[in-house]
Amino acid sequence: MRKYNFPFVEHRRIVFIIGAVIIAVGVISLFLNSLNLGIDFSEGTILHLRLAKGYQMEEVRAVLAAFDLDGVPLQRAGREGASEGREVVIKAPSLTEAKRKEIIAAFEERWPEMTTEDVLRVENVGATVGRELTREAFYALLLAAVGMIIYITFRFQFKFALAAILALLFDIFTVLTVFSLFKIEVNSPFIAAILTIFGYSINDTVVIFDRIRENMKRFGRKKALVTVVNDSINESLIRSINTSLTTLLVLVSLYVAFNYFVGGLDLKAFAMALLVGVVSGTCSSLFIAGPLWFAWQPAGKRQKNPV
Image 1 (cartoon, rainbow, N blue to C red):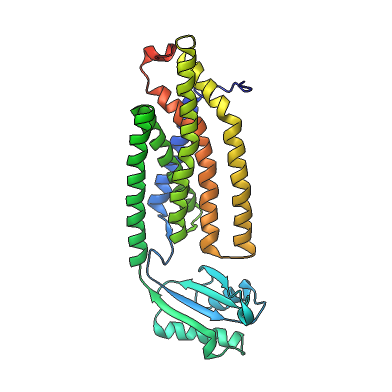
Image 2 (image 1 turned 180 degrees about the vertical axis):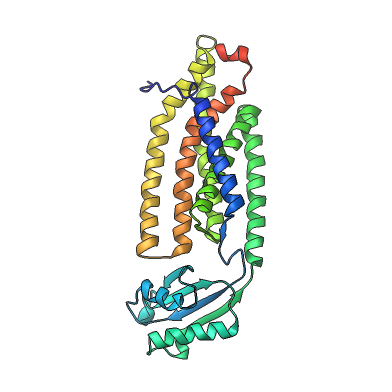
């Protein structure tokens, strides 16, 4: 039995306006700030050094500050044997050989026990891998979208499929907006997060659409379509919230772990993208997908169930 009676459909215009504002903010931010692309998507230099055990990231940034690099991504590494907790991976913009030597010399001055063996990796990397990964991810999303449209059209109807895809695109754009506004670095794991969000978000939407279809058949012409859609979303409300909260608890734990205990900025950005995507996906499934499908129905069919 439905326990809630929130008028999702009646508030669709407010939700659509809020969504339009988010999209507008995202477009402006992407135009002005673009995305903070990591070296996976732009040229850069990786320095992998072994420092003293128990070093602090603030100490590393203090050394890099002399070269105007105190804001570059850092990642703690080395979790086995004598190297446990001693290594740091520095991802900087492209550096000349002379500049790299100066930076390494500065670290050797700060940690005199360093030797040449403690310089584990010094490498200039290009954007080729990032471009290939982006292209393959785009093709994967395109194929997934086409597959979803075919499946949802076959199981429901084309307007359901279109509403679901637009809700998914809104979720992905919301993640891009957050990353652009707060200048969070976009790296390879970010692509994996986008693909995960694409798959996660559609699940809630399909469940709600399935409930709408069942209620349309169940009540025939006894209820207005607006009531059927509202009832269907409200019947799925607790399930959607509980599923999202359970997922968010795991993602928050991962974010804290990546931020303070293991991993580094790459995985931290991955967890952040998933956090934003799950929240946006839950909201779009409840407030956008169903009401958007309803808004596309002919005016005459909105008053009564068209089945």
